[in-house]
Length: 257
Image (cartoon, one colour):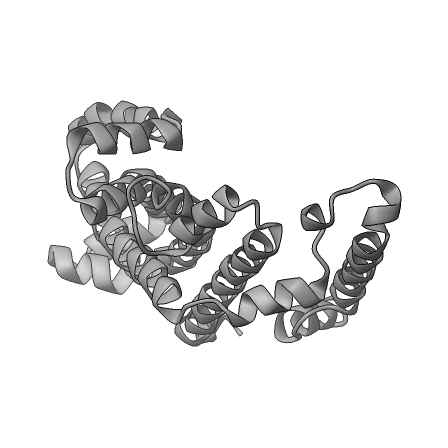
């Protein structure tokens, strides 16, 4: 019982004290460096103070945040549907798995930059390019994680379930789905972080809205404060989405508590 209490406290707690101290320490060191930049021969714009960063944060447009967030959520939902469907097909058919697994691994090995170049050369619509890049990067992760989770279901449980002669839907909904839910939530946490990083790169090519576009504009203007501000927003978006997934995971998997 004593071994479980620290683990429960860590999961139930919020930001650890050490993390808070680290963040405050980094902020203090950054502000000191910003104030000493002229003395050290560093251009003032290269290390902006938090006053300038806050001014850039107060000038951000909600539209760009909403557009990026919508792109990420739409692409992740589509990636999840495709990934789960492909994983089920691979699980049910050994031939399908033998043919598709090498292709899935090949897709995962292609760099994101290459997919962006392909999207620019293949498609005209900017939105379609961005969604294409996000799906082709995130969907294989859902495929691999879902398939591995299904493979990890004990063989004895599967055999016992099949002895009752269930329909496919009964077999999947009563046994497989509850068993793979922890793996699915873990996959969502991984792909959320991946999608946030990929969408900003995808938005750099042709997009006229979104956080990636704003980062490109800030880079062209050599505005480190704006780059810092938009980066903080991306981090905040990631934390927000992950917290929502964790809350949903806690509710769905409350039987594990």
